[in-house]
Length: 402
Figure 1 (cartoon, helix red, strand yellow):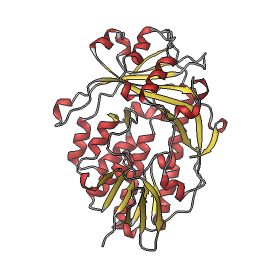
Figure 2: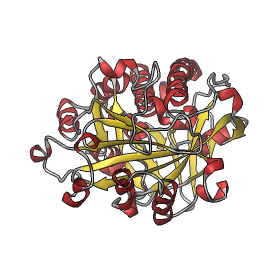
Figure 3: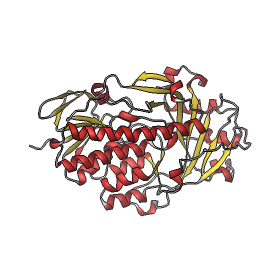
Figure 4: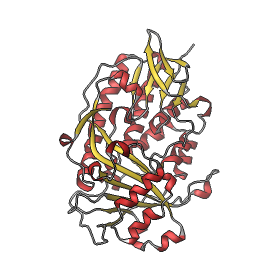
């Protein structure tokens, strides 16, 4: 019997890997701890650039890639750059999107819509409400154990289970990362007529930034209007137009204990966004006053070390995406790096003929390339964070065990 690849975590990287295996008729099973695909708010607008696009073109059938393209939003240019009081905030050299984003093929996606699109045709092999407890490695297989008392045998187990990966904690138990000390509140505000009446025309176009380089106590706001030009061309409803926004602040400036900020409700997150911006001009306050309060959430901005230390590879288990190289979202590299990992790992499995033929050398080569690519991606993310969002240098931040 041919044993499947067991993928733990149905985030973007895990689903992309599943699609690539599905396309190449490699058996797989995909397990997600949430009860359904849209259980948690996980952010909204993402940019898919060169490496992510290449992975998707390799992983998806032509028909599914076309569907992906039709579910994408318009890609905006740079918008305004102002201070919280509405006066111009001059850009410093190097500010703005990464240079490659200006010249490459770029797609703007709604994260939830993209995830639902990637789940197309995978329904029979995706299992929700399955939370991993641990795994056991045997000579000829690996066994995954879940909190519901069940277990699954596979040829290879892939941890695609995010920053606090259960797979990584067992595979690399002393893995250390960085707490940047920054917290991010993200949300969405429907582009209703009432909201647009409060919003100057200049605030409706492009990817805009509100920052005060002279006042470190002020959070930084990035916002962008999201429209779906091909909504009439797909068979399922796309989101109504909305403003995507994220508010970045130092944990030390939040009016609540830091440990509580990790666990607050959507309503509390919405209230926090309003409290942090109560001194801002009315047009900017309207972003938070008129938000969809059910969609607000707070996350800690964590990162892998800029240079990830090697570990002893296994023939039965490996990692991808945030499970091994979380990075600040300030370089638009996180999702693209996860997709790139998925595409590279799938290619190596296909070249081996099946997951059972994958050995330690194959996984070791994959992980070495992963570390090298992640080093560059993390560097881009830190550079963008330091230039535009007040991120401290990595060496100044707290080292933690995730």
